[in-house]
Length: 413
Ligand SMILES: *Cc1c(COP(=O)(O)O)cnc(C)c1O
Image (tube, rainbow, N blue to C red; front, side, top):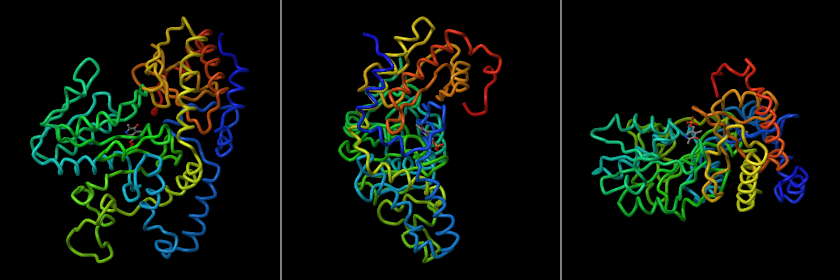
């Protein structure tokens, strides 16, 4: 029996997470399937920003560094992210960007394996991860990069006794393919290597257990599934067992053991604080704090169950409703192997996505031919999945995407 819209309505009526949608501002007439790039605005965010601006800054002025907890904000917010990624207290700090944090933990990890000169990553990694690794090893001597690739080196082949550090995205940003964090971390450790996990498409999309997997380091952004707002600060995880030996190179004063002693020489703080660099971008923490007020109430098991069901439904409906239009599902078929997004390949994916956006169905496009649809369980409904596929069918069957308006590339895809 083919799935119907009425069935999707019933799934929504039965959805234990449905009430979270009320916590977000979503524009009328929009089906938002790009929360994997920029999460939706939490309803509480504007008030929290206003409070920080008007009260903490406007009235408190410099006193707010102490009175409003500004100085400790990176660790305080880190404590709130920790349960979402399976970390313990004192293992997460929120500051800077994912790229910058990757540079810090990657270089610190290299320092923990000084006798090894091979670093491993994946050819299909989000490029900034590869670029930051290049930048870091370029400052040091004699490093060699080994890349895992489809049809090339496997993870098992790439990791041996020469490898210092492995950097991998838990969820692939294009296809949503999920790595087995426990198995790969164990494999790396068996060969004496350390692993840095990029959790940009994991945090807020599915639960992950960094501690139970014995992960060494991790980074991730908060503006995607965590809904922290454009440019919100990133998180950095360092396992407690590594912290005191790990030295990160961006030795700014906020990572110093005693920043207000203003000494001439750098001495890293104990614990996770040494991964801070400098004055936090405080206004960017405010919307994230409002979002974490929502996350505090989310059952991650239910979140994952809904995410699996929505992505399964989307794949099923694309095949049911859009057969014969040259689409190919580029994401893993098994929900176990997939994050919370589905990528669909089409030779004219860019104009097709532009035509979808024109009709209020917002996903995005990744070169050369992938349309990405993100399913954020807190505010996407099963009927949205249905409606999006109907619009996709309409765009393909009428060839509306051939309209000249959809041809030119925007700066940001
Ligand atoms: C989004 C994303 C980033 C973004 O890095 P920024 O430093 O925030 O620009 C990095 N890595 C992955 C895997 C991503 O998906």
